[in-house]
Image 1 (cartoon, rainbow, N blue to C red):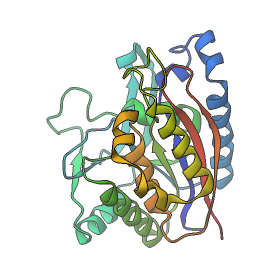
Image 2: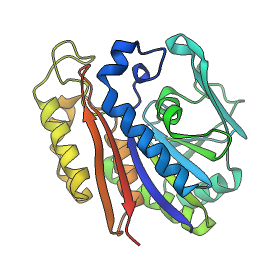
Image 3: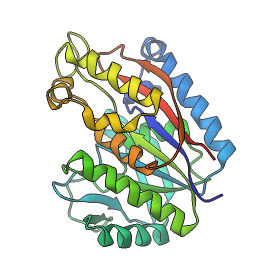
Image 4: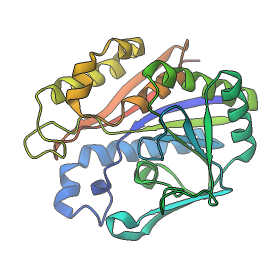
Length: 274
């Protein structure tokens, strides 16, 4: 069956990957790891042709979405001291060509990234926003990978981008799983990476509530000040995912949520109802 068969929201803290995370660290994120392993089983059952990922840590442009176009996509967690933790997967050039064509038709700008581009060292490689979820979610030899970035465009544009992605999946007859990579608030408690703000917890509770209820339209009702105070990095990825399921009946479930290190980690699945 063609189409996006499963949507996933996944966090991307390198600390959930051993040996970056110590035995103590991994104990703190048991719920997250367990949920990601459950999602892995669901992906295997679907057996999609492509995994489509969007990460806030891929190169971000003001008015465009970056798309990696190398035939082989690869990257490692060398920035975190572990070059041996790496991913290497095949791209799908034909799908990317169709996606960019549809983006152009909808006045959405795409920027291609390949190994010949003059980026800062390593920016043409897969980032940890892609690698960390895939560490738990994929057999890298089994599926093709599409790697996308967010942009600094507004939330409505990200939602529209999601609709274009979904249309392209249907037009190309692919069976796909979409992975929205992103952490929630980085300000959950004193000592958190972005400092503490009480709105961090409020923001995360609201996102969990919206996803569990499948009322994605409520994402557009989030208060700008609440979003800013939360210090999040995953909201734009979530808007793209929501756009992928525009007009569809879905069953959504948050499989886990925790924030032991002051950053909110949510794992969720969105399943279209046939």
